Image (tube, rainbow, N blue to C red; front, top):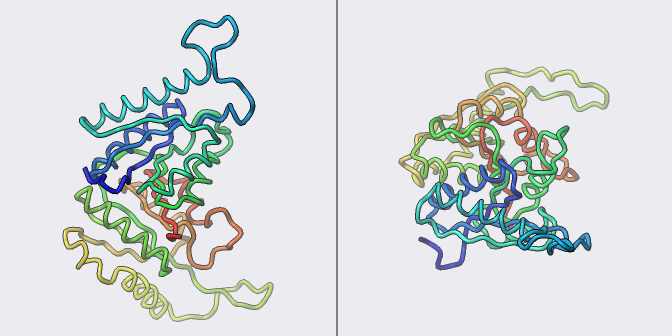
Length: 293
């Protein structure tokens, strides 16, 4: 295992079926990276001044903290059953789930989290913990959702920004580890008039516009064949909104990789509109990549 620097894949678990699924996918991810797996459960009750010990008169082994130990133990067993002999440790950390996982992201190579766990509001497509961790983590975040596939390409969204180039690198590594190809998707729409209140499409040359968008994609993929010669790359330029285009690509992909914020996104958003869209609608797990601090 490549663990001399202490780096590990971290997975957050909460006792939900989705948390156990995250533990399984995290185990496979750690095995691909030849790194250990760290299973973490955030124990929020001390912050709320609730005792974690057994209630008065309760049986031995009862209580919230003992329940937390069972949650971690079950997830560790699930990971070890998924990948035999994988170095796996578990820990209970006092704190809120998002804060605990963000702290773990400072040293992790990847944080894995379910798209919704226990206590998630059913009206939300993706839980707030997944959104917060994906928005602020210091490492790539794998959000477990959609279908688990071992066939199909790794898809990546490309918009020509520096962050999307980083997403391409992460996606190419994933494709190499998985022994599959890379589907690089660049979506564009017709430019609109800049005058306030006038949202009519500008007069344009469709051929010239598409040629420019193809160059944006080609520039973002430059040098990829030298770094990952074993990964076949399929460039795809589509005239569509980016979120729906990537959601469509996710229907055949085993993984979708996006930057946390793309070109032209409002800086006040927790996540960019595209990354939020795919977290809500992707048909496969999603990796969200942020710019390194």
